[in-house]
Amino acid sequence: MNQKEIAKKAGVSVATISRVINGEEGVSQEKRQKILELLDKYAYVRDINAKNLRTSRSKAIGFLISNFENPFFVSMYQGLEAVCRKNGYNIIIGNTNEDIRQEQEAIDLFLSYRVAGIVASFVDPQETTLRKIKNFGSNIIALDRQQKNIEADTVTMDSFAGAKMQVDYLAGLGHKRIAVIHGTTTNLPGEERLNGYMAAMEEHGLEVLPNYVASGFFNEEEAYAATVQLMGQNPRPTALITHNNLMCIGAYKALKDLNIKIPQDVSLIGFDDFDFADYLEPSLTLIDRPLKTMGEIAGKMLIERIEGKYSGKARLVVFPAKLRVNHSCARAERIIQE
Image 1 (tube, rainbow, N blue to C red):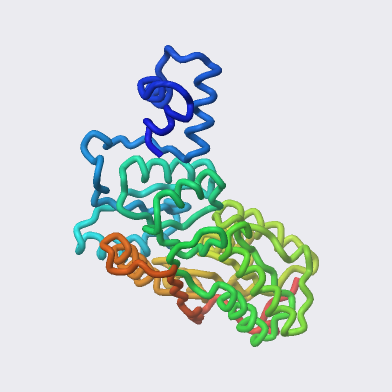
Image 2: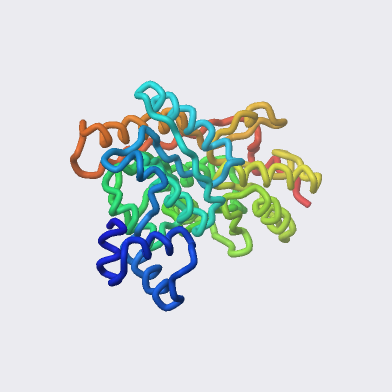
């Protein structure tokens, strides 16, 4: 909905709408509030390029990520950027820091630049954001984090199977006291990974102890604190699972600071690769996936939508989980007990 239509519904001039949007004076508080409510209701987004781009979108693509510090997104960006560059598109990055408000601001930024499409690793899209996305159309790809409430092409991995694979491997090494540091469960991958852990523990007849389950909120600092808490239990776990790479780094640092040796004192297994995982001492066993390829496929699917080469129902691409065995896990009987 444009300014003229908003003005008609509010019973004011387009100039008044413009003053409110631009934060200018000369509008009563009552009228300003009414206009702001209408702008929100109809998911109006200011177009900073309106003078030049009234009839067409830009050659830019928005890339919504949840954490600049996560090497996970660097690998995906490399794949996405290669495809976009080849097809003449530039990328605008929006970082949410796993924050709902910042997610809304990033979406507004993308739409104000009239991006041709959006590749997004959503936090938890709110109703206002969902309306804006719906009004934007089908040129949205959900990358990694599949959404229950958004009809969009999705590129992801079988998170449930990956989390089960972690437990299966450790159970095969004889571990029974297996702790987990899980991520945010308000998004589907976080929920599926925790469910995968629970299901695998049940399949192996292993008890899930509440004090062996901690949230690391998909970030390094929280995982560090969670590791200190978990390793302070009596008896303490013989194996520790993390559900993303930042949490694995946090757990690794905490174990080092606690002088708890890997894998002599505790086995550690991660989720998602990062550049130096193979160069740590010991090198990390983890669930691996082709992040660069996922970025490439997301880019290709989005450009197909933008250029009208595909206009069908939402597509779902799911990569299988793959375990990469290194040296951070040992058989349970080799774990030194306190």
